[in-house]
Each structure stands twice: as structure tokens, then as C-alpha cells.
Image (spheres, rainbow, N blue to C red):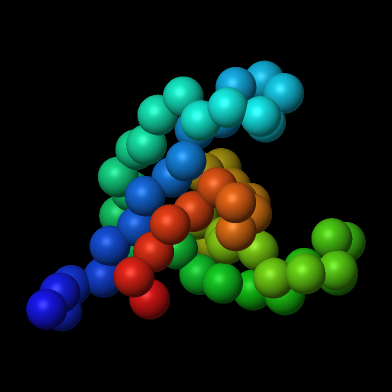
Length: 65
């Protein structure tokens, strides 16, 4: 049984139709937050670092947490 948190980013083509690859990312950099602009939960990567902050949707992230 896995005890360690893991996260993978799903990389899509430009049309967001086909998966091109998967990239493991540091799960410690992810936070799930409510986004009023999108009216849904999103994943924030590097939420506390303005220059590196990224918004990722559920379709872009696979996690075990």
C-alpha cells in the first residue's frame, strides 16, 4: 500500500483531445482550492510563489490523495 503522496500531470495536445505524456510532479507543491472564476475546484501549484504559480484542472492532474 502506498503511503507517499504522488501526483502526475497529464500533458495534452493543443486541442486538449489526446494525451501526449505524463510528468511526475512534486505532490507537496499542489493545493486544491475553490476558484470563483471557474466555479469549481482547481489544483494550484506553487500557490505561495507568485512567479511560479500555476492553475491546473482535474483533467490535468492524477493523484492518490
